[in-house]
Length: 594
Image (tube, rainbow, N blue to C red; front, side, top):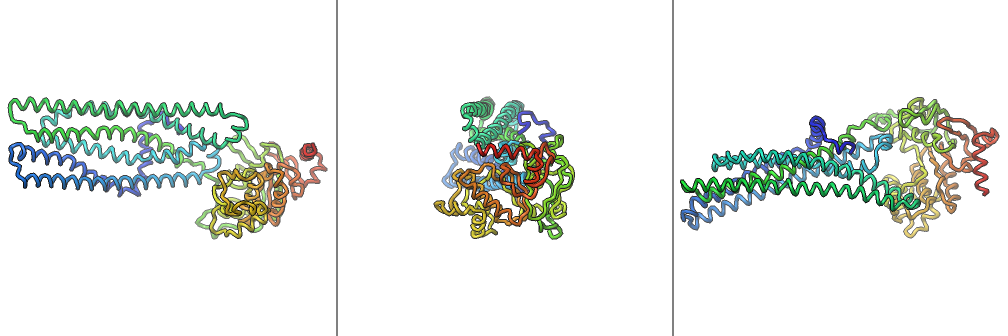
């Protein structure tokens, strides 16, 4: 989290608290019932020693305990213990269920919010940071359970003190002298533990970010033999994280139970000394001493829980501040037509594409697209060529509505692209990327993308259409072969053919190819080209070309440089122009011959 190591102000803490509390409200009945049963268990815990005190002083010490009296008090004590256990069960059950439901509710909300955010947000946030917010921080969001425990601890202290006051008000007032020491202990523990815990959370977020980067970039790491260097970096961060964890354990070991137990021991000694002094002048009942000391223990036992709860409460505020940051983020994905008026929203029927003077910037300062204009008629193929950073992928990103363009218009079938619903765009526009992501599922499910509306036969027909059937049917289990993570068992070309099938099974009107042939292997190159040819039939296609030989038959070719169109025409026209495109084509032809 971005400011996890900084101390939150009272105002910031209050704002975070109000933000958190609203998530609890739909499940408040669980916590209300938990509190009711908590009152019962706390009251019974203070009452049970008093029952034994009456038995000891009224019957046991004066030797008046008949069998009937013994069974009566034994039965009464057992009944109170059973009621206490039942009440504790219901308190625990309501509290845990309420916490689980709220956790699930928050995680769903955060996950849903992330899907509403634009790509610009993900450009700025490390994946590990987001994973930490969704998983670890929502676990730390057990703040309401912590808050509940803090409230019940205070309740236990109050009830125990009332019991002490009823038993012996003079000595009970002496117990109040210990209160400033307890408050001081709580303040010291809170101040020390919060700072260390915040640092530990920040280091854990950094650890998750590094781990995600290392796993994602493992091929590059191994290729450039960076295992040792990155391993040392990871080990350093890991050691720092566990160093903070060790400090948390040490602080708890010194300031939590030991300190409270020490103060409780002092209090019991004071009580015994006062009763000893009183016994010099009058008879002191043993049951009274037992009841008083038992309630002194009940008075002190919640202190440890209260200190721990306050620390966890502060830690929960720190963790939840990261979630609050996500939930209040305004970097939304570009808006589309209202889903409430789907019947009025236009449909993509022909597939005509037009850019009118479109400009775009990722950071709001440096334009990566400058005054881009072109028209692609239904069924035509438009190709973009240019060096890295020329703006090719940015055009695709803008058209797919991953980012909002800053100037101009983007039209589909002469309608503003903003008027189409997101579902219509995703259904009618097929995107094939350079890197083919595959899920851990069967080949069929990877083609269908787990869409139950697409039949297995339709998936197989799509695979045959793009030439993927040639290698799929030779797999051990054919279309039911399980894909391992990332599709590592398949070649780059085979993964791309499955990607083609995944796109074509939805029968899109518009096809976008983002360097779809850049990383293919020679074994599947012919199949890839045949698959692309089939896919482009009767579809409007925009393709980013790495190999110029693959777009020679394109109806239009736009040459981009630094976000501007510097040449346009078909393959023959651009060669005749003898400009930028012609130079690129000659270089690639020469490289192929070599």
